[in-house]
Image 1 (cartoon, helix red, strand yellow):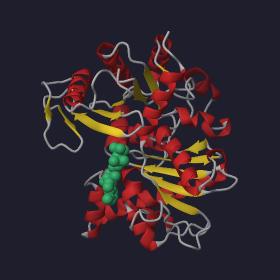
Image 2 (cartoon, rainbow, N blue to C red):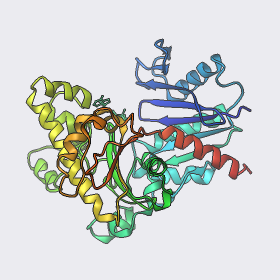
Image 3 (cartoon, rainbow, N blue to C red):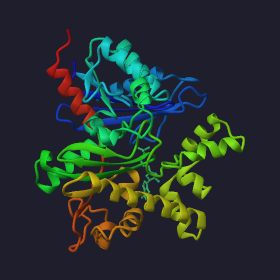
Image 4 (tube, rainbow, N blue to C red):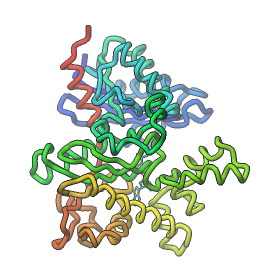
Length: 398
Ligand code: ADP
């Protein structure tokens, strides 16, 4: 057995893997896309050549091909010491990572009605690994677990009580792995213990969510029962008036179509009519494309509103933190968002922001800002690798 840790993240038609050594340095990572389609392919980061996959390759086929590629490069010699899986929904059962057992698998299956697109495919990854490495301990890390500390008044919807009692209709929150990394990493940078550090963490990637973290614990978050609620995202609408469903129904649009439109045709893509990609939108806006400029404005204003809303959950604030592809790389989005927030006292330094805080340990706030403002690259794979190693060592297999 090696002392490496393998991290696996299965999406509906994609798979990401990363391999870490005993000191938690990343040895390599890879990606497979379009799984189940005729043009499925895989590749290792930093290598232009693609690894060919069979027609209609499955998650397991891709996993085998990527593991073989790690082997050929001598990154993985025997078996990994532990394997960590990202699992989207842990319901109310999982407050932290868990060692995979039959009981845990059954619980993940039970949560699948809350995440029908994600949990089954996460389980497919666990199945594939159980075949490939039957003796290696596996650990599951849930997107929802970090938010299990939300107080009831923050996680309940104002709906008939029976929906919660019978079906678990409540706010769960997602991106927990990234938000928890922001909590510890911003505390480290501010030189404070995590358990006395309070931040607002904005994870802005293709999916976007924002979380209030009070003394290390999640106390409010913008995603809800599903990852559709809250901020404007690449193709997801975020918050809309619930009356919209009725209205669209009256126009002959079916529930299935509404689901598809809100998840796949809305957000930045919907408003701009061009793309869900923020970098491309910024270029289009620069060239004078009005709808693209508007998409950016709506995105930033919604985000600013939510930053304000998150302050209701905190007694003090140590830092506002930006992460994810947009949060880490778009000075424009950070600037526009913060320009709505001078009343509470957020002020950004132009040059530090332009430089993404790289020369200032992440800090981009100006001298007159009431709060620190940070840009911190997220590293969900590292969090999963650490959790996998910790659980695999602390709970030996029976
Ligand atoms: P995912 O949620 O799929 O992991 P990422 O966190 O990589 O996605 O974020 C992807 C988003 O980040 C895209 O909208 C992309 O355009 C945006 N992004 C990446 N780099 C930049 C940049 N330099 N400027 C603006 N947006 C960027």
